Length: 343
Image 1 (cartoon, helix red, strand yellow):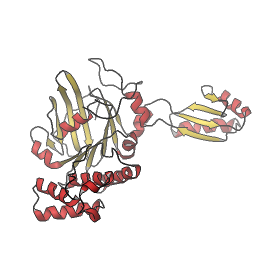
Image 2 (tube, rainbow, N blue to C red; image 1 turned 90 degrees about the vertical axis):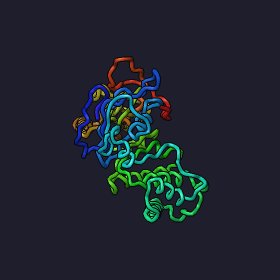
Image 3 (cartoon, helix red, strand yellow; image 1 turned 120 degrees about the vertical axis):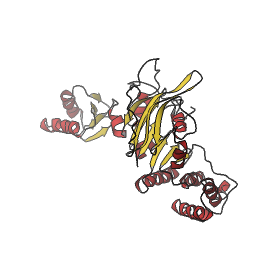
Image 4 (tube, helix red, strand yellow; image 1 turned 180 degrees about the vertical axis):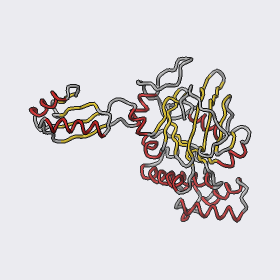
């Protein structure tokens, strides 16, 4: 995947990619929501799209899942052209929205059988798939209960199970753990990982929880003002952000003073007897600090390495205005907007 302004053409050979897109654009009236989005998402991976309120995350999902049409650009999903083979795309994907699609008046089994009917499965196959998914999601014991009695975590698991009735190869998950307690969130994470590792499914994830993207995603992209401004693994994105450091604590001011002379650019804290030494978090950098302390006989009590997290990435890269005509490059300063998607 590339940032806006560096297009990579979509080729006919998309066997290694679950989703490819070039130059996706979408406007609502005079509001430009997507401004040339390019994607290349490998099969059997988790891809996370992050961005502040109104960045265009939901619009991207709606286009790729054929719910709305792009104004410009082209895309392929599961090997099918988004425009010319929309029905084939729909038969290959599943969509689990932010808000549960579970019918509270039906039992868990009835919800699954309803989805089987919508997928035109015969009755026997529908029952088989429903029973299999109830077992997989540990819902067999409550299969006959109406879902109005379910907890949030149980409803979310059933919602995802309903998405799997059609055996999709690509699944769009829009904030799948919103409102869940920490234990239920981790259960959902394990289910998502299993879909990828065991079934080879590709997951397109949007989330307001940055730790969720950190835990699950093979690749992460940051969308802001309708443009992709950064992309990479979680570690790659963190390395782009300044602020990493090594914190060294000493037993007395004598050793603190000696170390401060060695590391002239380090920030010292007299109260805690610590030095904060700028670092990129790499092993060679850490080794250099340790070697400097050892060769000068400076005694340190403890040492900890601190690196930026995805919160730092989000706060730094997003929230800055994009003047008309600018390219979608990463910003070095910024503030976070609400992470609840409206557009």
